[in-house]
Amino acid sequence: MTELVEEKLKLLPDSPGVYLMKDARGKIIYVGKAVVLKNRVRQYFQRNKGHTPKVRAMVEKIADFETIMTGSEVEALILECNLIKKHRPRYNISLKDDKSYPYVKVTLQEEFPRVFVTRRILKDGARYFGPYTNVTAVHESLKLLRRLFPLRSCRQMGERPCLEYHIKRCIAPCTGNVDREEYDAMIRAVLLFLEGRTEDVERELSARMQAAAESYHFELAARLRDQLAAVRRVAEKQNIVTGAGDQDAIGMARSDIGVCVQIFFVRAGKMIGREHFLLQGSEEESDEALLTAFLQQYYHQAAFVPREVLLPMELEETELLSEWLSEKKGGKVQIFVPQRGSKRDIVNMAEGNAEKYLRDEAERVKQANAQTLGAVEELGHYLGLRELPNRMECFDISHNQGSETVASMVVFEGGLPKKSDYRRFKIRSAEGKPDDFKSMREVTTRRYGKLTEEELPDLIVIDGGKGQLSSALEIIRGAGHLKVPVVGLAKQFELIFVEGSSDPVVLPRHSQALYLIQRIRDEAHRFAITYHRKLRGKRNLVSVLDHIDGIGPKRRKMLWSHFGNLNRIKAASVEELAAVEGMNLPAAEAVYQFFAAQRDLLY
Image 1 (cartoon, rainbow, N blue to C red):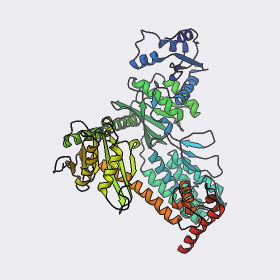
Image 2 (cartoon, one colour):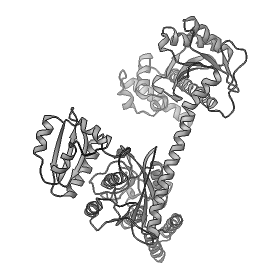
Image 3 (cartoon, rainbow, N blue to C red):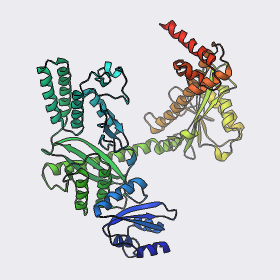
Image 4 (tube, one colour):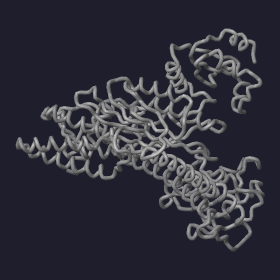
């Protein structure tokens, strides 16, 4: 304990508040709340308190601390949530990657609101739904909403309808012909739908359809009929679980993989969805501490708080959490542990799903290990290597009848691609005529000609048969690298040719070693083809621009650097072309007119 800490311990107040523990660099490593700051903070520095290893490790790093007094324990809870989210302290339990959770935003502050996905909650008058962990599911839900309700999706409305209107995905409020009342009715239906209140949506759509039909607005009635049918199809997939009301049912499970919390969302008595969250820093914490921390962090950023939160276990801070959520919702929120009936059933269901997620995750990790480290061990065994081929470098040649010949080198470490170490080579020795052997000699010379033994990989893979392998070995052994194993991979049947043997190694079908060598070969091929196409694109661009008066090598290069590809140059205006460094107005007009003439010929 530092002298600074000792002095501050004497001055702690007898009031509720928040404390921030800091290390020697002043970085906040833990944030906590207390009913009485003096009692809670002093406990950390008492030697006979029987702290967990995690707390002891944290206390050893505390060089200073800071306290913030609050008016009540609820205020302390709110402040603690804000500070944890802001500083993300190392020793606090935290939701994994909680900064990236998406929300659905309905821009109620706009005259004609939009619905889209966002990752930021602002106090801008909009309505937010979330957070969600499955981004794909969120986008699928939005696609469904846009099929049901033709809302505008553009950021700024133009003066005439766009393509979305013509494909029946928008009713074009930009035209001024849309009834504001009709648009607002759609927004109300969207909000009810996102809240899971499909029965209310059905009633409203049915009433509006009937009214439109009675007023002889048959086109509107038909549109409402289609929306109603689609909503009913969605509602059929939802199961009634608790009879009525809004609840969040929470289940938790832990294993060697970590801790998973599942939330089942029940709205108006129907289960409308679920989300799972993983907790970090949870190894030595009790189930009660984990669940308490989760409730604080999740509902601190949740866009909706239900009237009931169903838990799998009793918590010491249930009363405090209930008071906080009631204040946040603006109405009474109950937190309790159901003992029997449908509410207990859905909590059990949430716990069962949390356990299943951890089992599935454990199996996924097991399979991933088999496909990476396990595959590396297998490959080393089949090739008879003395050491595991942890780092593998694979080469491939790509060209088009000898033109734009390139080579790629991809790197795998521990069975996984290491893209930061990928290299690509523009081959000079074989330009103009196809010669894979000469190309392989050049690329291996450039790669291994000056490397030391310590810098060599554990295995070199040449994509090709005996000829390419011989060309590579000639260079690699000639450079004095006698120990590194080099193999050739035939393009057909994945036969592996090894040095000093006329018979190839045949890896067992369906073995992880075979799948690994295929992944390496395919990645080398993809990387080489990508580079070759890029060079070919540049060459084609050069040949086209060569026909334009006033465009020489320098301007050609500047146009390519600025626009990146031919299509962008074709689409550029005279002003955009003239703004490129090295260009002037006559040259820009020449380029523009050249491509304009081509377009005229097409039509």
